[in-house]
Length: 145
Image (cartoon, rainbow, N blue to C red; front, side, top):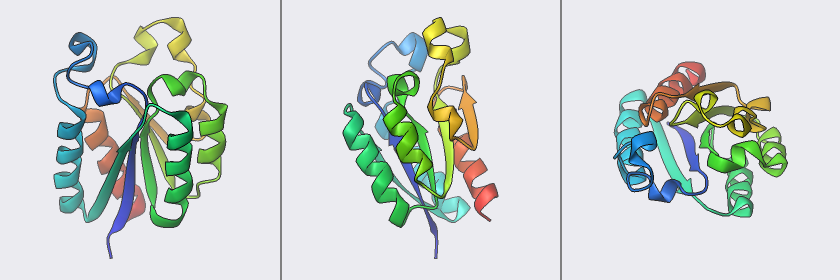
């Protein structure tokens, strides 16, 4: 039986490929999910993906993953720097948590240097563009096997 991985994306990532392509690139979120789905099959994993601009929806997705997923790959976007509630939800999840950021948040505005999610994450990938998702998926596979 394959292990389920939730790929969870926060606010404004529905605009990936359209919003600030000089920072985030031209790939859409649909491209990211499609690439991860192909790779997951090669790695013996399955992925489900969700995106929300609403903090409570993200928390609900994390809660649901407690019963279905072996791991979560999360790009909390702006909630990275503000959401203790998402941190608390992740702390209630027993599987692997990998935090992904498309840009190198440490080269950006100082308020982006703080991550509440990192307090729970088993690993953080930042600054590798959308390739960070597939890097996280490969890491997830190596940790779970």
